[in-house]
Amino acid sequence: MLKAVILIGGPQKGTRFRPLSLELPKPLFPVAGFPIIYHHIEACSKLPDIQDVLLIGTYQPSDSLNRFITSAQREFKFNIRYLQEYTALGTAGGLYHFRDQILSGQPKGFLVFNGDVCCKFPLAELWDFHEKVSQDDHYTMLSTEATRDQSLSYGCLVENENTHEVMHYVEKPQTFVSTVINCGLYVFPPEIFQHIGKAFQQNQDEVLNGDPLFPSKDTIRLEQDILAPLASTGKLFTFKTNNFWSQIKSAGSAIFANRLYLSLYHETHPDRLSDPKSETGPSIRGDVYIHPTATVDPTATLGPNVTIAANVTIGAGVRVRESIVLEGATLQDHCCILHSIIGWNSMVGAWSRVEGTPNDPNPNLDHAKMDSGTLFNGDGKLNPSITILGTNVSIPPEVMVLNAILLPDKQISSSFKNQILL
Image (cartoon, rainbow, N blue to C red):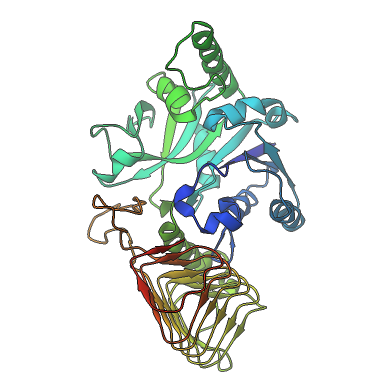
């Protein structure tokens, strides 16, 4: 028996994802037609021994989360539960707090995912690698390659290339350590809780000793407090993947993840992609997902890398490229949507243009990752990025919105560029 744990964080995290996370918890934001963590759960369903998936975070239970769990359980035929932390406990603190639930049924091991990663999830290969390691009481992490400069923004590790043992691990180092980075996906046996328990006890001792710099007695960080000490002990190993991998930190990274998952559908779910040869539907270029309930005029042109959600209405002559159009939105005749996210129930008027600036990984650098930088540059100006329309935003006909972020319920009357409209 195997279990899976998905760490979904909470509302105090994911601030770079606003305003999209104002209406819906970030883990439920739809990418390629399905919530971000749906892709994690679907990958788990490919492992026959998975019987239980636990979501751990600090979000308050909500109708949207309950509906998602009910729907996913019905589809995948295994148990899915949400366990709410009483406060933010850190990436290892949540595991330790719910250790009894994780260990119930005596699983031989469990997978741990960060909820904001996007990748091909080579779970079968990762588990096979973990089981082939002869060392008892060992732990495995998925890793990949990054550029030298970008590696400083991730957890970096140094491995023995013969045994794949992790010899050194540093989370977001100040100086260069390695181009091999942590993917935020792990295989742990039950013995991991012995190490987390030691870290927890150390935290309690420091609090009792009155350390004024210690932030919280309950917070335990998986990367700094557990993985870093395990490196070079002969117990931590890494399985390296060359498949695509990205984090979903900002709205711009959601557009990039949308592209990656749509491309993966060719292999896993070709039925989800619109037929470019259809004589009755719109003109399709590249990978496009259209929800069955969406209404799309046959003269519209969609793609590449476009997701159209449920109950969207798209008028005549509309052009959409590299974008996500969320549920209930309306795109009136001949409007143009490029590198943008159109929010729930928003409306773009006829002949208007909504456009953002892509911030894709540098194609000239091997292993380049998605940059999730700050919204503002050193001069306090908005950095060019994709355009985001929050929920219930109204764009009038014949205007342009460029590199802008519009918060929910805005109704503009003229063109805007390089601004955040509060």
